[in-house]
Length: 372
Image 1 (cartoon, rainbow, N blue to C red):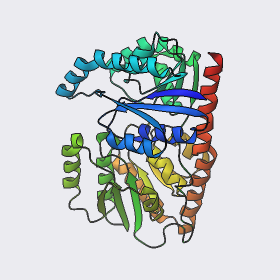
Image 2 (cartoon, rainbow, N blue to C red; image 1 turned 90 degrees about the vertical axis):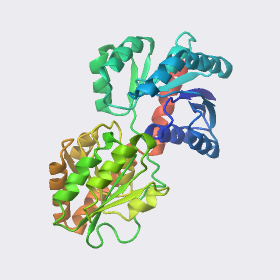
Image 3 (cartoon, rainbow, N blue to C red; image 1 turned 30 degrees about the vertical axis):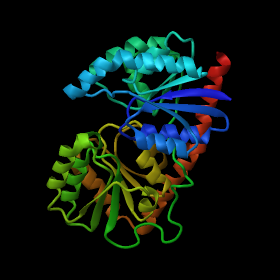
Image 4 (cartoon, one colour; image 1 turned 180 degrees about the horizontal axis):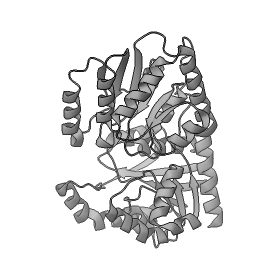
């Protein structure tokens, strides 16, 4: 059995944490994954244990622009690298999996261990200082996973030589047995049309532009459902959004929902208003549920939608374009939206299902181990 030490320095939740857990669970008969994550992520460690996945909770400070958090990150950096280095020696994995371009502690701890390192790129934007660090450290890594083709293009623009190394594009996975279309009734049963977006409420999600779209479409029968928690660090941002939408009767804030799959099955259209996204898992899950989509041009969404025809893609940071696309969707017949939704579902089955993503990851890891 292949042993992978998967290191994730961010403990505040998000798509990569879900991806790590899902892939580890899918491959646990062939790959023993040990997930190393911050000791502050108690709920995540519990979810890993419930899934039968080994985890190690250690003190890890995430990187932040907040001065006090940044200071703690710098002060604890060397100590945390040494902790990871000791863990690597104790666990003796076949492969070390690092997540995100700024998450470099595991990479530095493993650099002289002669254990193959896989660096997984989950985003399409980082500050210039991270560019310099990535370019310098990428020379020590021979294996890369990119969350989308555009992610690969972005990082090759920073360090062109990584394109010459072993790499693969693997999207975020979707469990198509959990996310599936409504079996009876189809889409858009009655008016108003229910529109949903799901995700942590933070500036990268561009919710202010979705609120602008809601304001521009008050004259048509559509209702916007915003689902997702507001982290303590984003409370001021979340409060401002709620104040800005307080006068809009067509906007409903739901907060955190544990069963988003069932909620999606009651919706008619999914909207992604993100500004930065590499492989938007919530959007793929909505597509698996059989929903047509309206999305900003993030990750590989435009390429996929253009190829299969399952929705409308607009420019980022444009509430006006989002509103126009939603108007277009609202004028379609129920059957037209159903057809788009069926294309959405088929695309996820063909390209993003957990089985397909897991198989891609397994083949890549096996090749690395055989090469070693």
